[in-house]
Image (cartoon, rainbow, N blue to C red; front, top):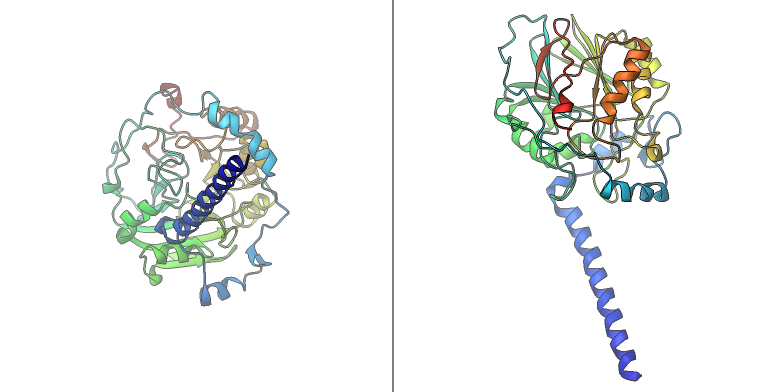
Length: 375
């Protein structure tokens, strides 16, 4: 009996030591691995604290916003692990490099979508990257959510002479450490929501190339006006930095085109306010995917995305935040199918190009059913 007690005692001590080592190792990893970035500190933090949207040591939404309870999140786990249809069965068709002739008119606007929320705008003579998550894993570790297989790799070597990068928030499926390292020397300026500059400086981006904007603030990029506008979401890359940086949607105003990018976020009255201040928009990029009832206040359902487009007074809608990663339990083609139905019922035109397909706004409206090739 005494021998058994000693054995159990030793096993308990060993288990405690293993758990302690695991916790310590995780803490050290989060604090030292560069992909986690660096939360704002010192004078930078003091400046952020002056924002009217920074309260009780964190950034806040305009209206009360919940992110789902732990129990609700856990209910999705079995479906996340064993659900069917969440990833394509075949490599997705892409059109990288096709129709890549350099724009000759500064009045033109070309769009190239890279999947999820990443795309390139060639707008009135400038090259602008939006949330360029072009890496393979939307997580700080290699075994996180990996990009769906494409028939051809994203040609990062073609992304040169970038005038501006716009960043909506610091989640891994929008702000990608490997991508920033590869592109930072090709970028003129980074325009971000408040606080994201801390991550960028940690990764070697000079401070003079970083412009942080609070909601409703604007900056000039040559002839374009970039406006940070509200979104209903949250932020954080590590264990202790929840909402330490801001999240935003963006208005891109040119002489000939006016565009809107939603970033991530739930539905709310801010869309109407943005539409009244800056609409109508020639094209609105609206998140459509990775939704669930458990977190419905921080990600829109497709029908809400279309409604947001109408609130914004957008003439044309493009669903984004799908087609690249498995971050929710719905089938991977469900977002685009629901968005198409809602768009048709609302009488609002939409565009859904191939990944990598470069199209010209007001000239082409590609609507291929390309996802059927990867279903």
